[in-house]
Length: 348
Image 1 (cartoon, rainbow, N blue to C red):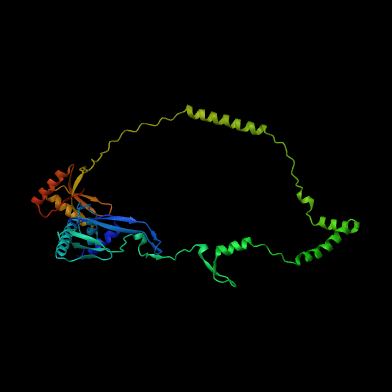
Image 2 (cartoon, helix red, strand yellow; image 1 turned 135 degrees about the horizontal axis):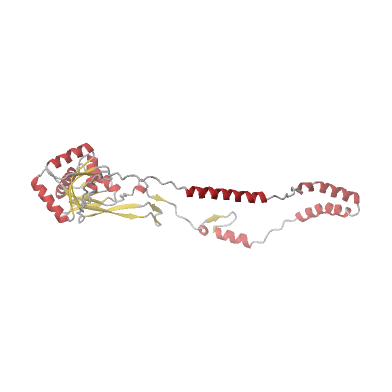
């Protein structure tokens, strides 16, 4: 069961995972939610569901096995077949095959392989490592009870606020008397101002000197001088006439370039590209040298081997392509009979 860690990694990275001959996993997402009864905040969760009817091989898990094990797709497919056979044997004997942190495979009374998800398993990488958070219950403001000195029992904050609003303001005695004593000297000074011209003149002069100098607000602007525009108008017109004459002279003397003799170049014929909808793949290699060696071997046996670089960086060797799936399958069966060492598969 050496492929279990690799399959576990693939389940975390892909939303859908199909194990050929066993079944497939599909993802279901749940957003973060709050449980009011317990005050618990659950982070976003991704769970997986197992379906035995998903038997179609999409090639994703096979390519990952080939990449991680450093082998070709044919060998990766054989490793997956061995894994499925071993897993079915163990579940038939009543054993459980564990995927650590996710769940386990087991067999039912009919001999079918089932999968049970581990409680609390979360495959969402965005919330990986986030535990459920417990928050304190929020208490309404009016429900808070206060201890008031000199009063038996407790009252709520709403009662305290209502009492403060309806209470009459308390007027403190003694402050109006202080204000009257301060205002008497001011009234006395105001009464003396009309009868004392010297005092009025000094106060007016001192207050006037506190302002800025009025000359600061007077700005002198230079007088606007008339400009002569006759020369400026004539000059561009003359230049335009001269430029027009030069352009006319240039146009009147055209230059005729000699015609170049056509040179015939040998155009290489485009390579033949397989246009079939269903290509036959004979191997997948990480090393280009190994891919070329195997392609030469297939060509020597009479198979039209071509090499294509996949987006993941592998060198894929194809030995033909067909427009219909039936024709491709017939060719695969024919190759199996001609040379059992070659195990091609159909890329769908």
